[in-house]
Length: 193
Image (cartoon, rainbow, N blue to C red):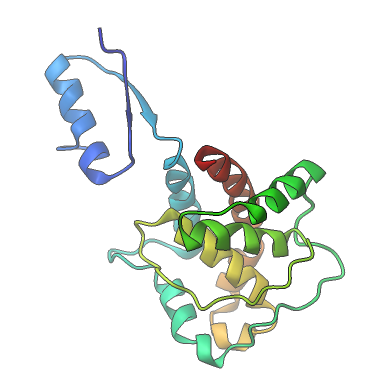
């Protein structure tokens, strides 16, 4: 007897009308337990956070990220030194991030993510912030990387962001994005190691 399904969080699986999960439930005539793959569940959380912070978009790209990438050559890429860390993280998370910096990762963004998280957590890493890459909605890792880069570079580039003040305040005070990113790096990297 089938009681649940584990799946990647793609529209072909989770679509409300024609997703494989929906069709399987219809074929069986009952509800099943939906278990998103541990590698993909954070994209659902990040999608909600970004909708609240930056609004929704009908296109495949997040416009705020597109503008950030287009203005990259005009920006100062050195984060401003902070008197206090953006967020206080436990020694266990710091140790985990340090461990992930020593692991050989199969993708560049799997290494870039903990490098940026280390900078947010005020760990001593001497690495330049790289030019932003993929920015489409399908890559949750790209969303997390953009969030960390924007936070690291925001205070030294406020005029370049050229957003209305209510949006800036709304975005910069939404610290849960960064807590979510740090939590994601810990769980996601553990899932891949």
